Amino acid sequence: MSVLAVGMSHRTADMRVLERVTVAAVDVPKVLAELLACPNVSEAVLVSTCNRVEVYAVVEAFHAGLADIAGVLSRHSGEDVAGLYDHLYVHYAAAAAQHLFTVAAGLDSMVVGESQILGQVRLAYGAAREAGTVGRTLHELVQQALRIGKRVHTDTGLDQVGGSVVAEALADADAALGGLAGRSALIVGAGSMGGLSAAALRRAGIGRVVVANRTEGNGARLAAALREQGVAALSTGLDGLRARIAEADVVVSCTGAVGAVIAEDAIAPRPADRPLVLCDLGLPRDVADGVAAVAGVRVVDLESLQRRLAEAPSGLDTRRAGEIVAEEVRAYLAAQRSAEVTPTVTALRKRAAEVVDAELLRLDARLPELDAPVRDELARTVRRVVDKLLHTPTVRVKELASGPQGTGYAEALRELFQLDPQLPTAVSVPAESPVDGGS
Image (tube, rainbow, N blue to C red):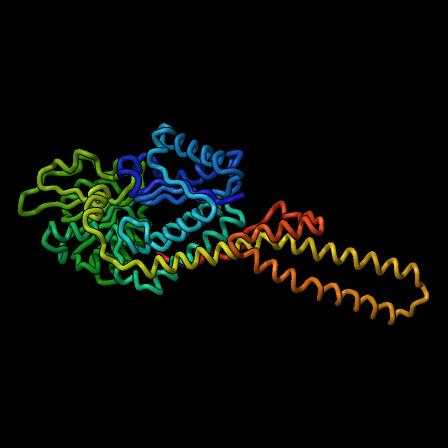
């Protein structure tokens, strides 16, 4: 059983393809259930963000597992499997762990160094756990990824210099409008991206914010938080978007809805001296295609951001971050290899205990007249001798097993002592919360 990572991101597919493959939050439990129903998949976590869709699964075999996962993604998206393979990347075993650690560190993001991915990985883990698709292997892998992502940002200072998709979109809006300070903004969607947008707008000195959300209670909470921070803010439902858009200078839409939320007929042409910037951060897109053709309106979306960021590298020095990820990958793999030998060591000690018990019973039968204190001392002595004889080889085999070629040592023990270690048939996931990191 090994971990297989199958995914598609802004690096391998354009936003139009990603849009079709992305999995809305409401559909995640259904897709996870379908993955777990596959004959070669025993655990699964699905990460679906504005610039990546990735499945991390524990599989029986590489090719069969890949076929299962690609089939689920194909059925969900309506894309032909052969067409999907043109955009998918695949990582197996050690490479899968390295990829997830790199993703969690923000080193594979559209905006290199962004920390939002930590929160997105944490949410993906929570959804998989709630759906019952996480076992010990993926639990340990994701926990390590979250810890490593947090360490990278803490030790390298990426949090201070790395941006975010929200920040980059609003930077484009700021440039187009000649500044955001004192202007009016509309945020459509009060989820995590909406919260990030509100915080970024506040820092930019926005004058007024309206939060429009399908569930008005969530929008009201975000608006209240803005008012507490000194920003004039109110909340509303999604009805009457045309009037709210007409009042705004900048609109940030990030609903996660399946279809367009802002249609072409919701946008009135703008005069040259009062342009409108629409930041569409939804995947699938929230803004209809025809909106960009409306006079006086500029649309900043993930596709345009992808092009701009690809043409203008971040300039961040990520060497130290890469070194940390590589170091953590080596430590994780060493720990995994060491853990794999534990059942063999346990079986060896069990075999030794059985032999000692059998010999002590034989001694009892042959020398029934032995005094109880003498009998007890003999038993303790025999057990101490066996424990001392086993101590060095069992410690050493764990040390040796942590190396790249370590599995051979466990196999040698099993062969020499004719051991048959029995692995647990079911493993429960610890009840503690995942490592905190990101938003």
